[in-house]
Each structure stands twice: as C-alpha cells, then as structure tokens.
Image (tube, rainbow, N blue to C red; front, side, top):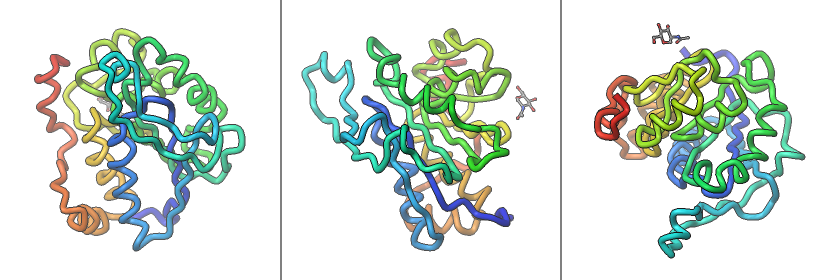
Length: 228
Ligand SMILES: *[C@@H]1O[C@H](CO)[C@@H](O)[C@H](O)[C@H]1NC(C)=O
C-alpha cells in the first residue's frame, strides 16, 4: 500500500567521478514517475559548477567519456524539505582522490537526520554510494550491500557494517542500498513499488521498457566478482 504522505522532494548528492548510470538510472525512473506524481528534484553538490563523471582511471587511460551534471544547490544552501536522498557511487569515490572527492558529501551527510524521524524518510544508495554513506558511521550494525567488484575492499574498510554479498539490493529500515551501477534501477523500482505501490512501479518500468529484477537476492554478480 502506498504511504499516506507520498514523497515529493528528491535530492541527489553528486561528487566528482560519480558513475553516470548510478544517478541517471534512478533519476530517469523518477522522471517518468513525475508524469503521474508531482516530484521535485534537487541536485546537490559542493559548488554550483557542473559535476563531471571524469575520474582517475579515465585520466590514466587518456579517456574522456565523462558527461557532467549541473547542480541546482550547493550542500551549504541545500533545501531542508528533502523527503528522499539518493547517493550514487563511482570510481571518483575511491582511488587516489576518493576522500577528497567525497569529503564535502560526507560532511553534508553528517549534518542530516537520516534516522527516518526527520524530513528525510528514505536514503537510497547505488553501487559504492553505500561506502560513502558508511564513512559517516550510519551503516554500522546495519545490513547493506555495494558494488560486487569493490565488495571485498569495501567490507575490509568498513567491518562494522553487515555487508550482504549476494544481493541485488538490501533494505534495512529506511536505508536502501544497491549493488553495482545498473542495480540502482532495480532498487529505484523496488522503492517505488514500496512507497507508491506496485501498480505504479510496474507501469513506470513498462513505460521505460525495462525488465526489472524483482528478487533482491537474485545476484549472479556476487560470484562473478568474487564477493562470495
Ligand atoms: C539483517 O540481516 C540478517 C541476516 O544476515 C537478518 O537476520 C536481519 O533480519 C536483517 N536485519 C534487518 C533490519 O533487515
């Protein structure tokens, strides 16, 4: 059953080197959802400059296949009526400049009430977005998942979290975490189903011509990337 008060303000937090589909997959689903339900998206970042998906590995390769997204607000002047927070991951969150790239996001996250009791009712992370969230300590003692290629490293760095290896996504209370990149779309539709109702989620997925994975435990990538 849909919640009595449906979320209408969604915020995505960006940092340099986020993975495009981590952000774009769920956002496209919410974009289509917003044809039926009134939604507003806040795009938050450290500054109002476009946030690039370029990262260290692309630099090393001499590649540039890295579009940018333009923020609507900085963390410093972020709206306070956010209902749902979406946090992508990406190579920029890790590697040589990982801490530097995500420092402002982590600081901002620490200022928020993410317990579910405040304005923000749900937190959704995609891919290594869960590692960024883990840096705040919020995932300590909770169930979560992350990108399966990064799984063992993330688990070693944050042993207080109950990392679930074989999971397309994991729900622990109001914290929803997904596996790598495309798993964020299954997470987005699972969340949409829970909050707006399965009929709405199925309609939006069909409108996207997207084949959902609706089983949270169906995750062949755990074996593929040696997480189990
Ligand atoms: C966390 O996962 C364990 C299994 O590892 C399960 O028994 C428990 O119910 C889960 N907790 C929540 C809050 O989902």
